[in-house]
Length: 142
Image 1: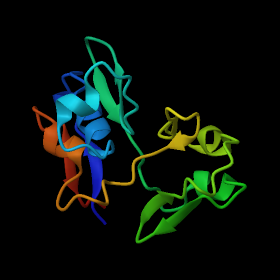
Image 2 (image 1 turned 60 degrees about the vertical axis):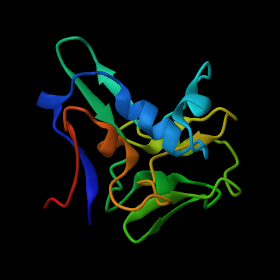
Image 3 (image 1 turned 45 degrees about the vertical axis):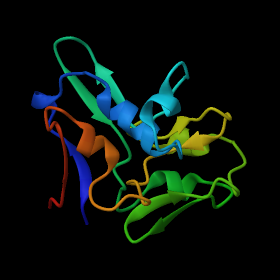
Image 4 (image 1 turned 90 degrees about the horizontal axis):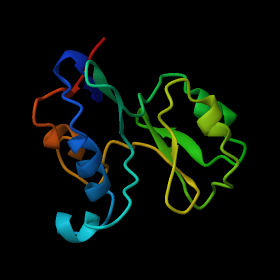
């Protein structure tokens, strides 16, 4: 299965992947209207400092601890992708505590959010497409 991988040595720490992610999940067709003067809640987060940075997003684990820990059944695996059903989520944040990568975050409504690999888009996820230095790649690895 293809997943988003990070080539840390290429990451500039520019945070553009976060903006493309937030825009892709905004439901808007205009990036400026979607993001200008608004707090963004991307499903990918750039971590690090000026010397070393990398993007953190869901790794869609083969045996996901977040799914096992979800008390409401809001997280499930479908076709290798971990999906979140926001209607079932009770906001207990057990998934946030369970994820060893810190890839599940709190959204604007104080619920949770995670990368679902941009299911509404055809082709590559928005973060990969928007990465100017190709630090994010969409590929299958062993």
